Amino acid sequence: MPQHVERVLAGYLDRRRTEVLGIDPVVAAAADALAGFVLGGGKRLRPTFAWWGWRGAGGDPADPHAQGVLSAIASLELIQACALVHDDLMDASSTRRGRPTVHVEFARMHAANGWSGPPARFGAAVAILVGDLAQVWADDMFHAAALPEGAHTRAAEPWRAMRTEVLSGQYLDVLAQASGDTAESTALTIDRFKTAAYTVERPLHLGAAIAGADPRVVAAYRRYGADIGVAFQLRDDLLGVFGDPRVTGKPAGDDLREGKRTLLVAAALQRAEQRGDRAAADVVLSALGDPDLDAASLDRARSALSELGAVQSVEQRIAALTGAALDALDSAPVAEPGRSHLFELAERATRRAW
Image 1: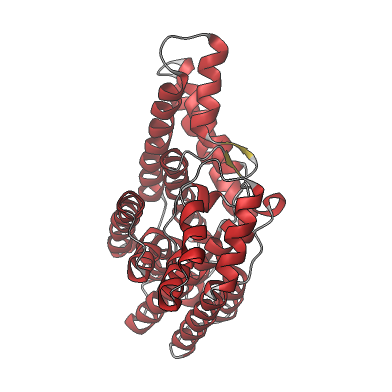
Image 2 (image 1 turned 30 degrees about the vertical axis):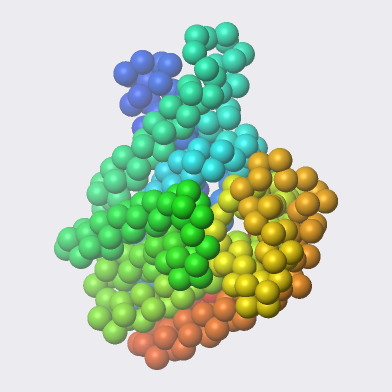
């Protein structure tokens, strides 16, 4: 599936690059940055969930519209690109997938050319525009896809909701970091809308809508998607602190340096308060939002998170969410091979090391 998605994306991005060349050749740098970002890595989970959601709702790969379905769901990768390019800027991340982030890359271009003004401001401006371009092209790609009659109308609800939900979740994340909100409920709400909705729930809903699914299938997909999507983010939170940078493509401990108010952090602080362990809470809080967090301080924070039981708590939450998601899927009339693949995807999304 990822190879098919990449083939469709590469062709689409190449055609759109030709279009911007007609505006001015220098604009190709922004289009090339977007293409490099989209085609340079990624798990392609969103279109994969959408495809198997479509198949599970009765979609047939032999159908004449199957290629149109593939184009429609591939556009989800452009929504993802928009979110990540902007997220990297907001988090001041220096790398993504082992390479410089878009704002860093263009800041370096500015400095290398000796242009006027601060390089960082230029890099930020271009990253905003590249992310916006990804969003615009996602809409174009989705609406231009050759789908069966009525499919675009049916799919309008999840498409519109998905974009609003991810931006709302992103705002809640920014607000939590600025306000210092470490409540578990806040962390879970952010996970639900910043990640789960546009990673699993709405892609499944989109695939089901294109297929004209039974309402019972849509309801099961949404329950499965919300739970697996949150579990996916909780796994990501653990990897953000304990993951191997050679595998994740991001520096170890970056989530702590960026001050992310994750469930992992919230659970640790809650347990420290319950135990009256101020020292452990201080270790976690001192690491949170420290851009200069070194290896020794990171190790102390990791130890505190483990000793307070936060890691075990998050692992238990992942297991519970995964079980509930699979129960929801099992109770609905989801067709094979979609059902089997969605069970496999739940495993991949929640037990991964990347």
